[in-house]
Length: 76
Image (tube, one colour):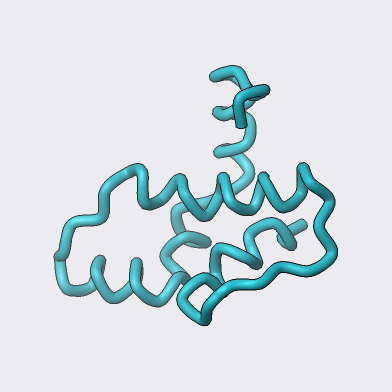
């Protein structure tokens, strides 16, 4: 992530919609219940997906709570 400048972060963020992020079960539940979701929480799955793409991983390991984050790098 150190290699990204701010304009590259903005370009990366432009590839993901809020609707896509709301498919994550805990985000959807919290949104429905009017429980706050901080901005850094929305960035985390996008950055994790970018990291997976950057290191060209073929396999990712994570708990079931990480499934959404692990699949972010698999989006077209």
